[in-house]
Amino acid sequence: MAAARVGRNAATVRLVAVGKGFPPADLAWAAAAGAADFGENRVQEALPKMAALPGVHWHLIGQLQRNKARAAAGRFRLIHSMDRLELADSLQRAAEAAGAVQAVLLQVSLTGRPGQGGVSPPLVADLLRRVLRHDLLRPVGLMTIAPAVADPEEARPAFATLRALRDRLQAETGVALPELSMGMSHDFEVAVEEGATLVRVGRAIFGDRLAGHATPPPG
Image (cartoon, rainbow, N blue to C red):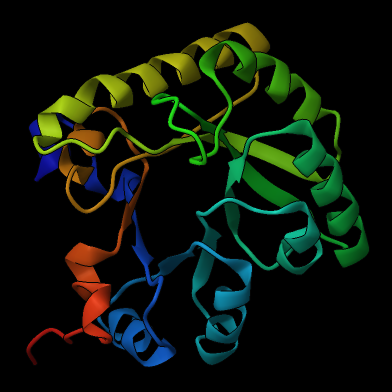
């Protein structure tokens, strides 16, 4: 519905089901219900789920530590959290060892919150140019985590800022950056209205992870 409200084709938006904290069995019913893309925050949690659920696409949406680059390269369809040159160097070496080309999103920090990860907007263009020097890394867009706000409308400026930044980068560099990963359970509709192509939704699908297990849909 959010896509229709702004005249977008809903097929241009992909749902990434975030299974952090839930076992493979919970992800399996989501896959049976039609989910094709799954997101995990940590490589070590993702690997056994990958083994249990072949045939779906995996996204790394949490921060990637350099010492986990070798385990991640070539296993994830998309890594959403490229935010520093040192990580690009490590991931390039890991992709070479894996014989893979790794698609990545540049993570942009629009909140300035410490520990959240992401490069500041004035530095994104330089990071993009540096990542492009790595022949086994393929930057395809941007990602951000919006401010934690009670009203989803308050997140709209962050989403609009990311879209405008992507548009400017494309114009300045000539590099196609079609993907915008933004929006989570509480604000994904606003994100879609502002141009998101990937929305990272966990709680709205699986429920509260503190409960220990998800509740399958009826039927």
